[in-house]
Amino acid sequence: MSVRPILTWPDDGLSAMCTPVEAVTDDIRVLAADMLETMYAAPGRGLAAPQIGVLQRLFVMDATWKEGRPDPLICINPEIISQGTEEITSAEGCLSLPGVMADVTRPTEVRMVWTDLGGHVHEEDLTGFAALCAQHELDHLDGILTLDRVDSAQRAAILAAYEAA
Image (cartoon, rainbow, N blue to C red; front, side, top):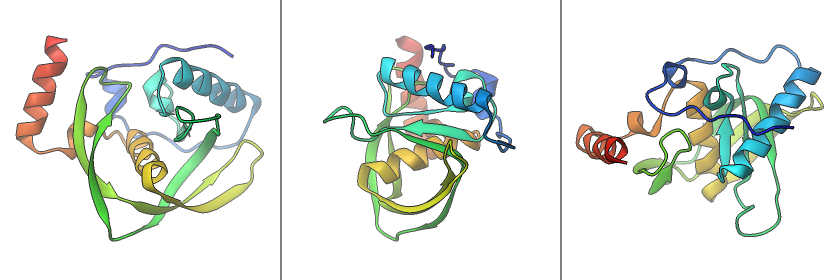
């Protein structure tokens, strides 16, 4: 396992659509392990493959490790298949936009399906911060950053703060 460099905005790879993972191979397992090590070292709660320059549909997350013991989730070819009607606006950070926060509105509950490293398909309801984190990471797989989820005034303020840092 190794810590990999995290790409930062405005790297073009961050706005690219990722391709599906064709098979769970040893290379994918190494990638997932490297991503977890990179995420924990950052320290973040989620990391998507394009953030380290790999344009495949894979992300890792651990919504609660900062409050307790690690409980990592590795999601290959994740897809949100339904979402709740209740939404919340909360400040989101991003490892690819270090030092800035964006107020993003998202559903507080989603149903997501994904494949794990053993090739098993999971379908689960995620709520609260786990739901928000999964949506944020899934956005990365579609080439969407938090900057793309805010109005023009907030985007301008975020970019000004980011460029000043």
